[in-house]
Amino acid sequence: MTEKFDVVIVGAGPAGISAAITTARAKLNTLVIERGNIPGEKNIFGGIIFRHAFEKLVPNFVKVAPLERKVIEYQYWLLTENSCLKIIFRDDYFKDKPSGYTALRAKFDSWYAKVAEEAGAIIITRTTALKPIIKDNQVIGVETDRGEVYANIVIAADGVNSLMAKHAGLYKRRKPNQVALGVKEVIEIHRTKIEETFNLGIDEGVACIMYGGPLRGMTGGGFLYTNRDSLSLGFGALLIDIANSGKRPNKILEELKNHPSIYPYIKDGNLKEYSAHLIPEGGYDAIPQLYTNGMLVAGDAAMFVNVLEFRGTDYAVESGICAGKTAILAHKVKDFSANTLKYYKKLLENSFVLADLKKFRRIPHIIEKNKALFTVYPEIIRDVFRIWHSVNEEPGKLKIKKIQKTIFSKRNPVILIKDLVELIRGVIF
Image (cartoon, rainbow, N blue to C red; front, side, top):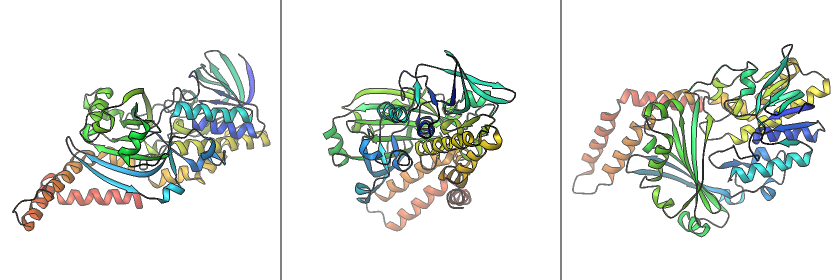
């Protein structure tokens, strides 16, 4: 296989396919290389897709995409070993104007790849991209396990451990405190059971984010999403924290499944799917060099994940669109050097991608260093509610004193205030 294309894209995830749709619609000869048997086979995510980015490429996205449920309720759980505090936000506004939808990647990515093919892109599967072909300091193609493919521009959308970006010298290695491992199961539950349990309409869904519990001491969180006739349950945690815990990832997931607040939801279900995937968690400061002569980097390969909001898919799509637009410009001016490809970063800076990641750049550092957020604080909140709801003849005044004593025995008041100020600074300032 030795051919020449205008654009070669490595990876058929949301970033790669979005780039392919953009370039193919501009009549650029576009090839997508995917190592899985089908697009989506090697891709996983928690389970929510945000419509706004996809609608730039598919205006009737909600009507034609294979979506599971529109999310009308968001839940945030604080877990300890045997307790759970739930903060629930449900708004009928999202029944008519939902932002997020649950989806299953195997179905969704296959559909999205067909959109690219209809636009004119060629997608080859079961092909592993090994490294970029570099000549005179210019990326001119991709070496695969089936031969060489040449291109004016290569777009690396091949995930966190991007071989393309690494061999092109755009980063040396990912640090274990910048990458998380995501582990997920899809558990089959009858549709009516899901709707009765969560009080949902036929196409309505719930998104649950969890902290603490089996993930005590780890920077990360669990998740539970409702699909049409299944639940997506899993967690993501920094690699370094999983290693330090001494637990295998499947053991952590089993503990999460058996938590008394989670087990009732899944006890009658059947396992349909198990998957694991690396997730970029380093934020703005972990972003590699995004372009070089003949190459652009997009999606997870560029570390585009917002850990504060559990968002990554829409960042991948937007970065793919920006990469595609840059490739179009480069072909228009017939210059594929970094001097032209730097336009990609300008597009990203003018989009929500780099604006958000820069705004929240402190958050990954705060949550990585301050393990009390995932250990001490869930326990403090549990103890406060336990004391408050233990009704007896004890005067309320004594309860308040007990609560104060409990809080300050677990966290020094000065440090507590410092933690709060640091979080506020990370989010607001």
